[in-house]
Length: 499
Image (cartoon, rainbow, N blue to C red; front, side, top):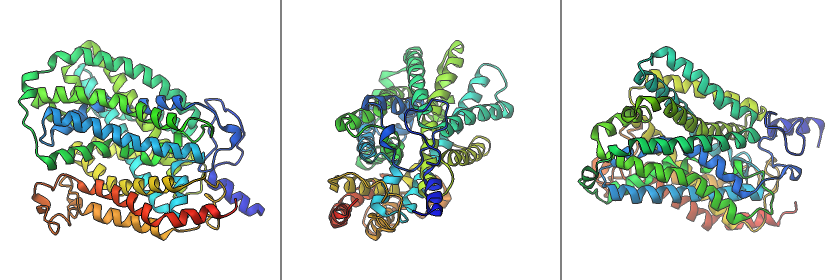
């Protein structure tokens, strides 16, 4: 390799100046999209519990109870749909995390084996959009929650408070993203403990607001509405994380338990959302006024049923929980940006994403009139191609008999090539079919979706199936089954090449 080639490779991977071994928590992580060197492998699968639990313990999980009932389904339907959607979607994350242990590289680097080094820029860009979108949503909610708590306390919850809250929240998120893996793993453990305890106190304080007769009176919904709620749960939880799941398992030694990687990832991510969602369904089903308020301010509305003395602790648990998720998002969005082709160090990519997050949060906090509509439109629209990618990636992973070639993941002339047309065609097919089977009445610029509902006899954009969002599930199936059919030969050809 020439000196010039070496310089470009170091910039691309973020490895220039990296040192082996365990780094101090407050030392900037220099590993980027490269495979982690074996001298840096460490940890146990059980340690995956902390980052995944902290990223999903947010009280936003309670608000999802209102979102689910908004599909016009009963308490029991919402409970079953929530449980299945959360656990199933996070199990997908568990299997993607297993690829991280096998390849020791970020998710969107491993995806290059599927789409080619250059072809993978397309799914990497999609991953970047999704993670930046999520971190923007979480930061915005943290600011809105802080302002609402200040208002409830009789203090100034206006623009000045929101600006200060945004500066503090964004600063903490960017700090975690810039310093990287070691700080995040420590930070998430403490966020888990603090938010877990305070959330239990919140549940205890508001449990008397549950009205069981009102909940029992909620009528059941039909099949399209149940499926729509299931898809919404999958896109709101696990499918929002699949393209980042290997980022946190890539430091594990190859000898780590594969069952443990899948199990601890799934359990850590699912436990808090399942409990919080059930409680949220009970609260939202007990009060239509509370449910309507959640649609406008999903976190702040939950303060209206709290005693005044717990408002400050609630603000702490709400903000910390949201930061826990946003920190993982900004870390993974930076890695996705590098995988998409940006040649800067990893910490610089995280900083760039932080600026975009702040701009997006300013729009949501100060200019957007409602939260729920744009949020659902965002999840469903990007959920379709991400679901297709997830199916393609997992099928490719299932076909592989050996590990990944670290050098080939960085070189378009290597075993994985520049572009794998078949994988990209499947991603395109899954997206086109999927968008034709979902609708988004939440924003005018999304009105073009749902174009296959009428030709397929599903009632068009106003029929019973219009909001079932079948396209997400169809895209997942197209990606997985399609890659099993067309990808076997390419995988075997890759594995026959010498390392």
